[in-house]
Length: 174
Image (cartoon, rainbow, N blue to C red; front, side, top):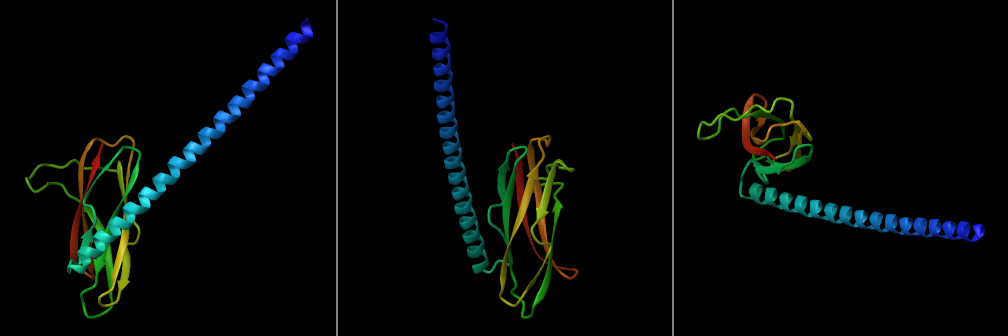
């Protein structure tokens, strides 16, 4: 009688292990599917943003940002696309920098993000031949402790000490 209970317990244990492995496999497959879809959506968005930048530069804008406002959840990172077109007659070295805007158009004070929002430029200097264009990523990394709100930044593209163009983008912390 004791042997029957031991065998039954072993069989139940094996069934539970087999079911657990099957569930783990399904979970991994589902996560892989979600990740693949997410990467595809991000690539499509990036292609759409690149097309928007190209369109703005085709219209003659010297400095363009594809989407000027993005909602970023605390703890996440998102990318803004910046395009630069050299309309000058010579090869030029352009410097890219950004500043935090203290007041908006309606003179409403915008909070200073401090170190809670990090802006990272893919390149801070580029050389462009006449009529060449370049697309640069601007990464906005929002700290988990950042305050909710709208944070406005101005990208300044300079040629030596002369400002070549400006563009503005807004990080909306949710």
